[in-house]
Amino acid sequence: MKLLIVDDSSFARRKLKQALLLAKPNLEIVEACDGEDALQKIVSEIPDYCITDLVMPKMDGISFLNEVKTRGLAVKVVVASADIQEQRRKECSELGAAGFFEKPLTAAKITGLLAALES
Image (cartoon, rainbow, N blue to C red; front, side, top):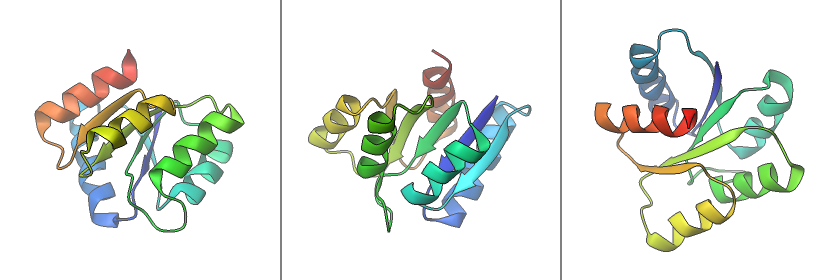
């Protein structure tokens, strides 16, 4: 299984990658620093799943979700963000997000996140 982590913070990407690999050592993980980078990686790396932040430069998570939906890209996207407003969650869901998890991600949230990806 190949997973794309999209976050403008290299620290956040590294910590999430470490936590995911502890839970699922066989994951192949690719990283992107924003939505534009992520769209390119979806085409070149063809990940099965994607975990994205919302607040990023160049192309934010909402614009990224919209592009994934508009282009009909075959990747299951889960949002992990500190922006927990109900309207934001609803918008993500309408754009096809498979789940929404509040940052910071704990071990329990990582388990839930993996379950959301695999369902």
